[in-house]
Image (cartoon, rainbow, N blue to C red; front, side):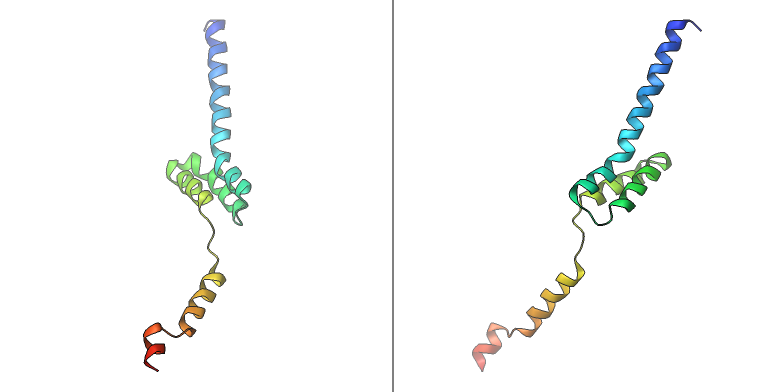
Length: 93
């Protein structure tokens, strides 16, 4: 193998490694920047998901962009709306 081909091969391997590292860390970095409470889990799925296939990595990427559910806030708003009388029942009284 000529020396020029060897250097081209080494350069391509290094570029592929840098690209892999950047892509695998992207969901975790995005979640950390957004202050996501499950950022560590998203980071883990990003690193595990890329070698296993693209689908787990895509799930991590979407998950990092979703706002986390605040179940207590949602339950409180449901309780408040159920204790307030409806307009129809209030007018009939």
